[in-house]
Length: 179
Image 1 (spheres, rainbow, N blue to C red):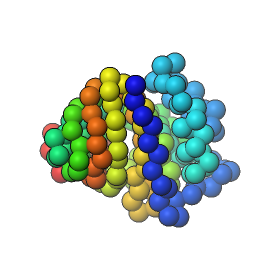
Image 2 (cartoon, rainbow, N blue to C red):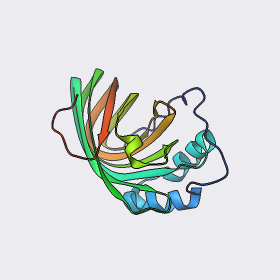
Image 3 (cartoon, rainbow, N blue to C red):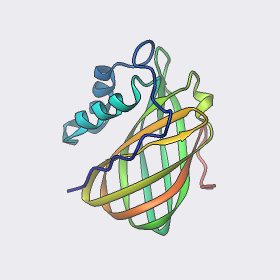
Image 4 (cartoon, helix red, strand yellow):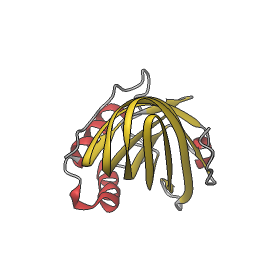
């Protein structure tokens, strides 16, 4: 089975605990909808993110594929949902480099902090990720840029091991160009 990896929260990234945004139960219901009952530890991961960040202003549900042999690529698609708004399509792609080998396909649930419009996501978000997939795995990391924090949760299948740095570029259209 896979391993769970939690990385440090970016300095100053703590979101407000009250006010607008999705409650922990709303997020857990949405995440369970995409991951199903197979994601053991999902509630613990979401609880940890809420403890670190507070209530998210939006979330993404989607799927992605990625692979690496020192240099890696990741491509994904999904829908982003802001509180009280209809879901909108979103795509992401990006390169990585590091001690990272293998490939995987994953369902993705991303908690988003610090945005009030989907257009605010249309940028690059740097991140550090470590993963170990042997058949299946569950992982989480943080990405941050310009006061916006993303907490992607991934559960997937494949054979992959390593750690890498890189970025993901989120946008309204699909692109094969990862840069």
